[in-house]
Picture (cartoon, rainbow, N blue to C red):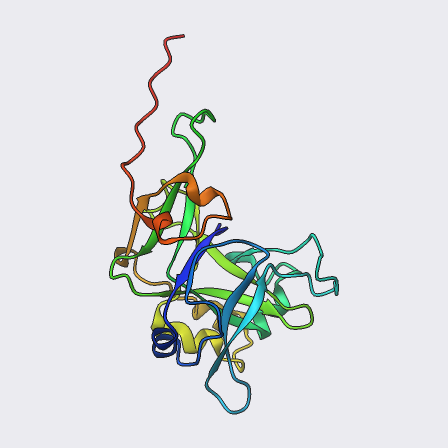
Length: 231
């Protein structure tokens, strides 16, 4: 899954990368949490091109008009998005990119114990370039969800799921509003190559949503294996 990410981009770099102006207030966000505003990029209808706007991170089911609906979903499985009533219509008609500099994922203790707690990792591109998660959204009650997929082998030891990080060459096809056939849409879900990603352990300071600064992405020494029990 994906429950925390960062977006650290100047307005100029955002525009060059995503082909549209950035909404205000997104240049330095190191700890973006669910239920908060996030930037999404969508295709402009009619005139073409793209536009960026803010939406709440959490997709409200299409039958609900309550912004506080506790059924908000921050993630949607890409493999079953057309089978789930909550996601199917958005997947066919309201797809988006969710820009990110990288994301955080928590690894369970190897021994299965809880004493040490989960270890957070930062996951991003080796070249430091921004990425785009495949997303779906609703307009009636503005909100979005990040699509997930089975984790690549190099990341599976951290978590068994990961966000769909689209290759830039697939962005136009994913956003294309005229593409409504489920098979064609699924075919446009082309993730970036696994060897373009890197991961390292970071401080548990990221666990607290109130912490929001560059130090959250700073590498720390890998966690030591738990000592075997004598009893």
